[in-house]
Image 1 (tube, rainbow, N blue to C red):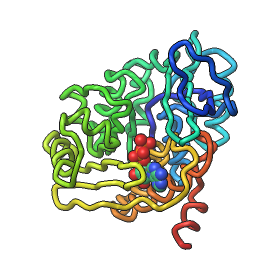
Image 2 (image 1 turned 30 degrees about the vertical axis):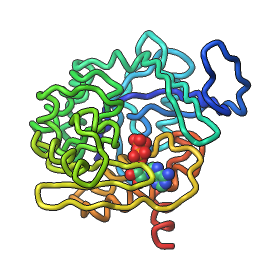
Image 3 (image 1 turned 30 degrees about the horizontal axis):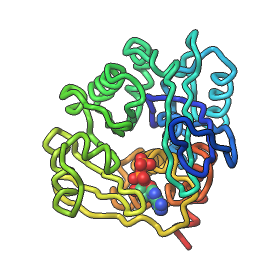
Image 4 (image 1 turned 135 degrees about the vertical axis):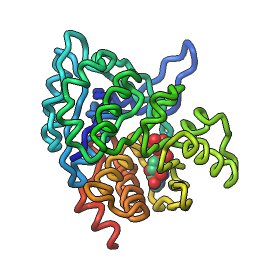
Length: 302
Ligand code: ADP
């Protein structure tokens, strides 16, 4: 069982030739809507990779909220812990440039109303999880609450510190597995990643703050894995990337599913997660692009 505590957003995907300048008006090349939000994406990724997943979060009492709940349910995610609040559902506006780069604007909406009390209402679910997973699109006290409940029950926690934000010492000491991308890691550690040594120093920074496992994702350069005993790089699979939105989310959901329930081997789990995200970057949209376990296993076998 995996419990994801996090954000649910409706993504508005704006396909544009390039970012407009101040005062400039540009024509979009395409426009579409997809289910997103780091928390919901990771929950869907874990479910598509075969894990039993429950989601704890909040949507608004609007059409987007109803739609998000349907999308999660359709993906096999249990939504008993998804509260409906009297506000709007979170939305993200994804400016996807023709060169594949993206810039994102987020309106948190109901995600901002996920309180520690709302998290605590799901204590039984959190206590029964093998892994409790969170990201930083919700308030830190809510994450702390979820991780405290999980740790008190002897369960594992995974934090994806995204988007980058300063983390309290209280939160850091509750994290077993931390999975930042390169930018987030450098922002937290204060150590710019320019070579192997600075990458290792970034991993050390987290290991010194209680994390047992650090995985720094490096986009097309792969993922760097470090524990007290070992450190290694799992290269990315060479694929033509169309849209890297949710690459990290797919990686994390797939990783946690591959590590659940009885501690799957770290290296093979990271390899599995790398392939899941390599498949995701070849398709447009967050949740629509997340592959199933069968698709990942088939691609790995080829
Ligand atoms: P985020 O989306 O959080 O910024 P990354 O860009 O680091 O995360 O991507 C997470 C993982 O997804 C990488 O470690 C890699 O395995 C895979 N990935 C990302 N971009 C690509 C790419 N262009 N080609 C192949 N794999 C990729």
